[in-house]
Image (cartoon, rainbow, N blue to C red; front, side, top):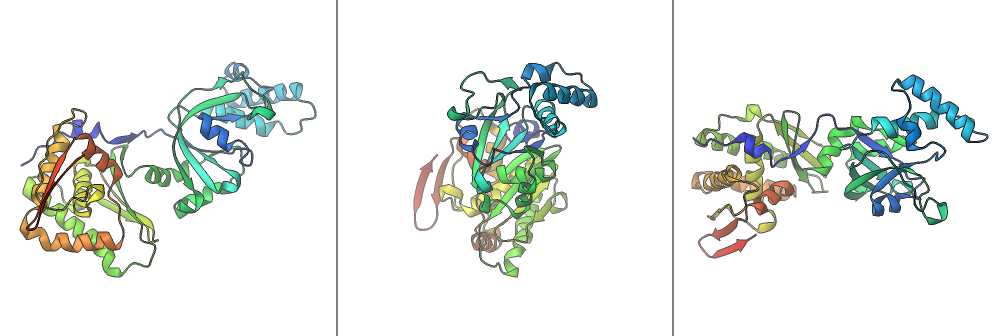
Length: 353
């Protein structure tokens, strides 16, 4: 029976905090998109109101908004609607938090960039002239994570662009954003694995039996290694579109890790790994022995010749659906400094990462 140290394992799985919020921030029709991305910030206008003004408003939302509206009336001539800018500035200053996810669209939203807010609100004082770039003084620093063409986004994320507000709260899209940015992560008490289906052509009904084959192997592994889990503990969601995602999740980080390793080793990942024998040696303390032990036991399990028929079926379906190896688990393998020695009846090759 294998005893995996779950507390150690979970430290190395990407965490998404439960309180994370999600925002779509407009870029003035794309005018400031490149500057936001290149200089790692987002901003909001109405420079008549400073960060110091916002910081000294009363905590009560209704009172703060009323005072802010009066400030705008007194400082900007001919302003008609003060309610909207006041509410948007308060959102930028108060509702946005460090660690929140932010999305900025280019012109016509033909491409978008995803990032995470890294700073509190601050007042920029340099180069605030329209001729030099974005003139908005109230800013937050952002670490950009990924840029994508809009047509490559999941269908579920397309609707978020319908909002025309300067700043839109898009928490209803959180799960789709999480799965787009990560393929192996924890959130709350759940661990998630995203299997990305890249096949654009119509899939056969037989291809969708992949889930049953994968769970058959998982059940066999769990039984053999005393994991104490079955496929009843694992939940799945599958996009009916192709391309799409297969989302695998459970309260067991070790169970989801095992499933990811099974897919990686059968799929081969970027290392051209076959199900042959290979030696695993943890050279880096950053991942530790728990994951190394998992790699070893999954490899030994998949080398069992009695599993070859199921493995062959699953491998064919993974190829048919063009499912990618989970990149986060590939990265964990790399941290092991693993040496793979692939062996079969015809050849022996070694690949070091």
